Length: 391
Image 1 (cartoon, one colour):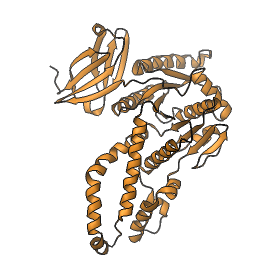
Image 2 (cartoon, rainbow, N blue to C red):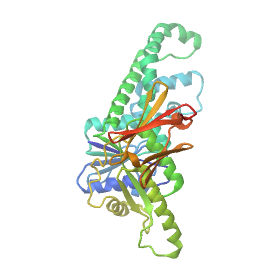
Image 3 (cartoon, rainbow, N blue to C red):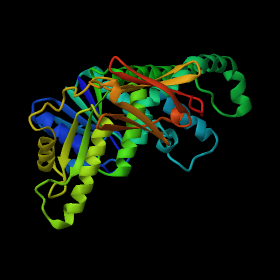
Image 4 (tube, helix red, strand yellow):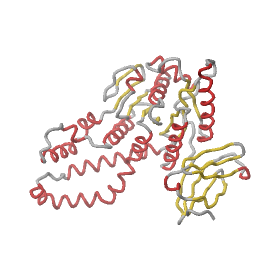
């Protein structure tokens, strides 16, 4: 099974790109599920069909779903939901519903991961395409299992033991129910499932992330930041999709300035994400809604190429801490080291290799540090960052 996630800044058209990919792969005979994890769902609007919290069959080999947190809580949260309900109602919070009580921030991320894991283990589909929430929420979704790891490994065993001991004493004094061992066991089970999902997302032969951008400065800058952080987490970004490029055959004078601007930013995209493959979808003559228009978009994006194959599978950036320094390694194949030059400008690192320039957004860890040295070996440019003053 393959999993492909589409992410990007809000409004770039990632839902359309995800749906178009799904329509194309289903047409090629793959059992495909396209699922939206964005709380502000627009997948149904893109397909021009009403979707539900369960997969809806659109046509042969194609299903779509908009994950709904309240539905997932009712379906599978079980004893944990019951505990939270009793906890709040014990404090006379009775003017809101059970569903509202048990859906807290981050719940959508957690439940989305559990549902996707279920589909993966059932092998119900050949391909799952995930229409993610905007970039920040996508990073939260992907890092959710890692965020829980420390608490579950360090504190959870202590808390579970303490609750067993003090439950009979604490409940009468505090006037609220304490979680039972069954509830704590369910939390442990959920964590184990999330850990499974982390391994699946980290498997570069299974999961690919594709970044959708428009040829606009703000969009590109955010995409570069997300690209950096996704690399730090070692997820496989295998392609970049440029959406809404004005076609060359549009000759109207009104669009000439826009076309020039887009060409400039397209070059910036190439410089920012090289050597990743880059695919383009044009600005269509009408809104991309419904299977017919999504089919056109899918064909424009991929042509005769296989949308499912892993387009790229090399980690392009990584950061390692060595004593009091950080080393940023950047994959730069086919480069002559004598042509390399570096420049740091604010939160950006500008790498030049001959006539090629690459802009890299630095993570917060490195922004206030200066470059201490660099070397190029085994197709990797390794840059050392240290104190505020350069040596």
